[in-house]
Length: 336
Length: 231
Image (cartoon, rainbow over all chains, first blue to last red; front, side):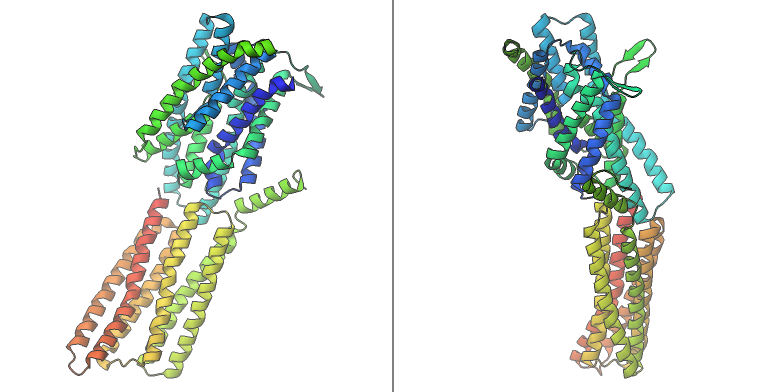
């Protein structure tokens, strides 16, 4: 079983290595927090977020893929890992959520031949959510920037006090970001196993640790391991080369990104419509937040080639993940 | 009470110390002492020049001695602050602004020390009709340094008050320019002075007046940093 779970855990490790930069990149790159400290905070909050909020989005991906066998789950997790590695090598921004959803669709098409109405509806909801996430992050960033700037302007603070507040804010926002990442993106790592019967529930006094919580813990640990072992370089790239934000903007960006990602880690009922918990891209949320800050400051400096690359990633990632899953599935099923 | 394994515990304790500013307080205290010494060196330069004009050699030498000591102490403080800033975790913006502030301010005591040393070594002869100009320009230099230290303190503690201080710096610099211009007219209009003496005095007034120019430049920089902080 460990071998069949390994592809998901590998995906979790790569997710941690890549996405920890979106929550602690600025703080580490500016040498404000030591990498070891940031990695520990990130690890703790990713696991906690995953444990508390992770199962909701896992259910959504479970419903989308309806995977009933371990080899099927293995293939659906290994394909996104390969596609992500290839896209990163090509320098195209990539979303783990999009890769995993693409792989799940590939699995369904290969196994069933078509998608039923409910799956189509869920797929469209997911796609619209992906579009809404950066918009939500931008809106939160815009409003928070304006409001916080107003507070700082009306209550001028000594330089060192401001420094302390901003440092605290950046670290708190980073922890919240790690919590949101764990809660939302954990489904990408272990969602493919959600419908399988792998572990019997364990009783801890009055608490029962269900299979989904156990999977959440495992996935959270995989993400935490990726953050702790391999995210330093990505943090430097994100915090120093891609987004040289001042501390105040970095705090707003990470906070807004975390709010947006955390929002989609929960399911919401609006009238009769139920929006399920949906894994989104934390990178795209961050880009949206940076754009929102740009609007709040009256700067419109987003580079069009960057947006073009993101759009390319949007189309290519799920498509290639679906094709690769469909391609390797017969082979893996035969092995299983 | 410990928090997990020893290295986790140590990391968390260091982090909390950094976060709640225990290490920042030393930097704040050093900065405060630095600015107080900058005020003191300006007053000692004024005293040295007054004694020089009054031909009180003993007074001049003891003021010169104090200037050297203070300049030395300022260098030590600057290095200590820079070391602290690099050693501890301040935000990059704060770090850069404080380092730039110190590097900029540090040129002023160096210039004051150089002016008084040149007076001592060159045995500069200042004609009596220029005494008032020297006194006026020295007063402007002393006053402008005091306003500059106020501006620096405002930047550190009450950034919204920086603009007001910077306006005062500009006014004092303008007054210094007028005094210097008037003095140069007197120097080059005086037929009894040799060309070498005229050039020597020109150089002296130029150096003395440069204190006001430097202070105004520093004020302009501080103004930009403060505006940046006020978002």
